[in-house]
Length: 308
Length: 87
Image 1: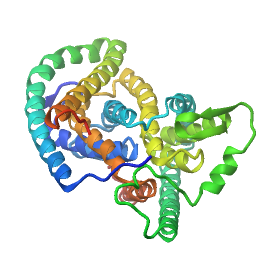
Image 2 (image 1 turned 90 degrees about the horizontal axis):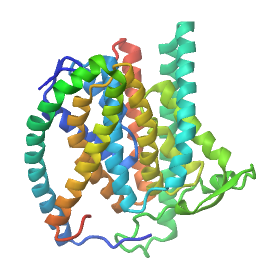
Image 3 (image 1 turned 180 degrees about the vertical axis):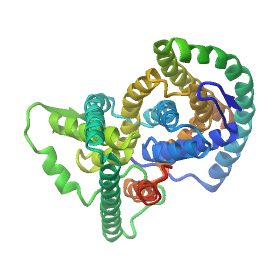
Image 4 (image 1 turned 45 degrees about the vertical axis):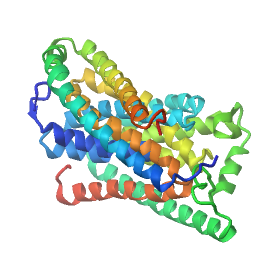
């Protein structure tokens, strides 16, 4: 199929299949999936600038479908998502400025690569440790009382004592998040979390869901299912902003995004519905390979010099 | 919040409904490629080249519009095939 905007010819079945895969991952984990979509679009010869912009447009569509489904399942905290969108956009701008500074210094690729590898490995290691400890604790505590299928949406974390300490910080203004079960938390903590997510999004590219989703769980104390749904809702706003910005620069082939999205629309629903059948720690444990895939891509790029 | 585990029969019905849904969806999407995208491509290319701000606005409207539309279609299909349940 010929796409006249980016002047490229790509098999639509390939685009639908990639969209479907990213849709399932996005619906289940609340991530944008740029670490797969970017290289996948580059692999079929799309220019780098079009791959980045088109991927963002496709993320908007996929997140709308997945967030709608999560909302129907009661997994979206709208108040939290809206507050986070402000911090994310601010952080993304600062991240983009940092990139410009490093570009002028002449060592942008090396610095960004090393930072991202450290971040990806740290997230994966921490999440393996935490999810494993929580699962072991649950096993010891109620070995015989478990009723099959009742595990869904139950959420415990071996890191919860730290989360509670963060929630007790009295930094005015304090707000409540009834949908997430958080009685009081400082607005500044939420802004800081979303700002850091946005910073990494602007600095490393993509939606940075691999950082934001764990931070929602471990720093703000949001249950995993709600963290996934709320992150998707927040991605709609921040990715729309990114899409608009890239489209003005001529970096979006919306026809490719629309074709990819036909696969993502069904994949995102499957991913979102699947979260109902897994408890929080299991979702967090299954999340671990995603940052590792990101790290592997960066290491490959650093070693070979070929950008995937 | 807890849920009751689906039975084997429910799982089989879900899988069957999903396969039928995929088939219906595939036919629908193929038609969509050839009809809608074919007519849209010329207009969008023109916007991309000469009216970039309108093009940027159109990208957001189109992707969100398609998302809402396809979500409604898949939800309707799921409901139809499962006799009133959407998940």
